[in-house]
Each structure stands twice: as C-alpha cells, then as structure tokens.
Image (cartoon, rainbow, N blue to C red; front, side, top):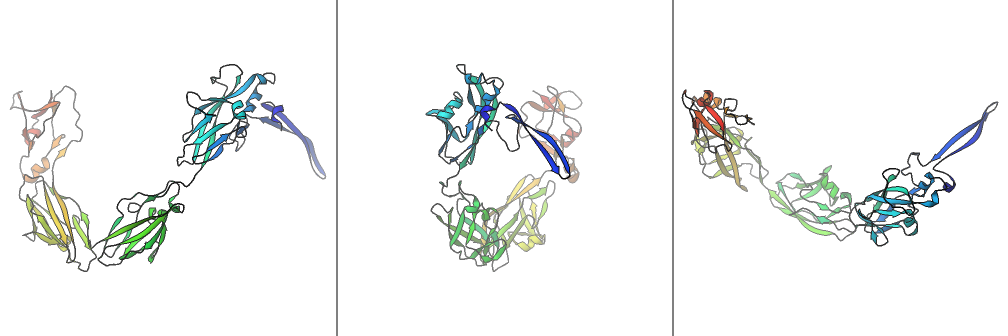
Length: 467
C-alpha cells in the first residue's frame, strides 16, 4: 500500500463468497481499518520506521531514514496543511553507553532537537563509548511542527518512542587474574574443592565457560579431578567448572606440600602462565569456640565442642600444650593441675577450667597442638564469664521526669539466689544526660550513686534524674 496516498486512518474492504456444493454463502464483505494507531502483535512502533541499529563495540553507526522515519505523522494533518509542517524530534533520554551526533555537533540535554529533514539528508550518528555493554537505547519525542515556528516540544499531541541499539562485542580484553596468592591448604590425605575464592580469572568479553585452564605440570602430592569423577585426574577445565565447585584437589596422603603449573586463556589472547601452591596441613583445628563460665560458678568443663582437632598424619595422637600461664585460673584433669592434655581428654569430658580470681570477667588459654610429626602454633581459646544479669535492651523514659529503676530494668536476682549474696553494681561510666541517684533512708534526700546493690534496686531507692 502506498502510504503517501493514505491518511492516518483509512478504510478498505473486499467482498467474497464461500461455496461447498450444493451449499453456498455470500457475497459477504470483509472490512479492514488501516491506521498507525492500531497496535499489531509484534509491532513496536507507530512510526513508518524505527528499526533500531547494530554497531560494533567502540564503533559508530549512521541512523538514516531507513532506520528512523516519522514522516507518517504528517498524515494526521489535513492534506492541504502537510506541506507547511515538518517533523521534529527531541531526545528525552540520552544513550547510556554512547553519544548521538549531527555532523560535528553532539546532541545534548541543552540541545536535544533534530528534524526528519536532517535524518533524510545527513543522518544522526551514534558513537559507542567502547565499554563492555551489549545494548543501548535513547528515547525521543516526535511531533509535526509548523515551518518557521519555534521547535519547542508541545505540551500534548506528541508521540514518544525508544530507539534500540545492539552492540556487537569485540574480544579486546585479555583475561585478568583476580585472586591474590595462588595457594590452597589441605589436610593430609583429604580432598578439597578448588573454588573461585582460590582461583578466579575474569574476562569482560568472555563468559566463564570460555575461560579455559590447562594443567602443564601436575601436582606432586595429589591430582585434580572433577566432582563427578573424583578418581580420574583431569588436565583441562573452565572457570565455570571452578565457580560451580566442580574442580577438586585429591591429596595423596604424603606429608609434603606441592604445586601445579597451569595456563589460562580465552582463546583470543596470549595465555597466562601461573604456579598454584598446595600446602599440606598434617593437623587441623576444626572447633575453637568461646568457653562460657556462668557467673557464680568457679569451674566449667572443656569438651570437643570447644576444642577439636583432626590429623591424617602417620601419628593419630594430638597433644595440646599451654604456651602461656592462665591469668585467673588453671586447668584440671581428674583434680590434677595440667599444662598439657590430649584430644581424648576433651572427647571424654575430663578437662575443666577453674577460675581462682572471681573478680575477673575473662581469661585466655593460649596453646599449640602437636603430633609426632607436625604442630600448629599460636592458638587461643577465649574464656568469658557469662553474667547472670538481665538488662532491658531499650529503656525509654519520660522527658524531664525522674525514672525509678526496677527489676524490669536491671535484675541480678539469679546471681543472688545462686550465690546467696546481694550482688553489687559499680558505675564505671555515668550517663550523659541524666544522673543516677539513691534515695537516702525514708527521707526525700537524694545522693549520687556510683555503687549500689540489688537490694537497693528491689527497694525502689534508685532513680535516673534528668540533668
């Protein structure tokens, strides 16, 4: 159909008959409405042309009349007026990864307009910024503008559409090693995943499936394998395999550390060559949890839940040795003070910590682990006194009014019951915007309080007084 001879909306029809002897139907008339207003399935634009464009990464493309043509908007006008108008565009949202240009002039927020005449004669150029983007777009408004009049976008009676740009990537980025210190620690005789936290190569132009590793020299203390075939050595894998936890190192049980030499490439650039170290640990600490001593108690059992180590060395016996004396207590095994103990003592619950300085709030057990062929030094078990105290998490008081403290705010009753005492509180840092005071006897007199007891609290003698 010749659009120049058709208005914005036109009607058409055809007449038909249907027959299937001896029966017949017709003639019938089939009506057709032709309009740019109609949204057909798959039709993204109401313009004569809005095809989008394809450009190579870092290159430019000319947007000409075949790609962007809004001449059909003139058909909305009476035929007698069409020659007095021209189509104007205003870019309402600039592209994110490139620049639009008319000749040498950049299209900007301050100068966003161009006409269909400019597109037809010169075209609009899109210049990609060479980023690793795969798509871009810009949005624009279009309207018929009377010739000789201001080309300001009207308040209404305009269309707005998007022009899409597809970026064809160019593999111009070499793979880059992201992990520092290519090293993996593995327990003697065990297997461990070689994950992206240990080995990560990224390439902005290539997905992980296209980043390929080749083992040039095998490790001398085991082999690499895939998770689904852990007994078969492999010499090739991808970054995607590493990212998906599919690559394993299988340690052969020897006590020696080793390494493997590998190359990695995206298939387009020169390979990277690197050495990956595999450190064998004959002994490993698998549990190291704080030991909590309930306030009011003097001793607590240390078990494998607090301390636990494993070894795959030739000697299975693990010994813990205290490297620095405890400051506020000592260790006992079956009522005997000890400076060393074994993993079996922990497993059987024979080891206990006894606090001798009941004013202390914490202690530290600094130790090393030994087998007949290896050691692990510089370890610390933290011992903390767990207060038998309930403290309100978020105390809210009335503005400019004194607040009486109660058990709901601060409660050491459990400690009092367990120790048959009246727990004492000492203020080590006073409040900033109020003053902690105690009522004196039966009088209304108040005195500053830096020391008080649970009995004071229970008797309602303590107040927070605003300053």
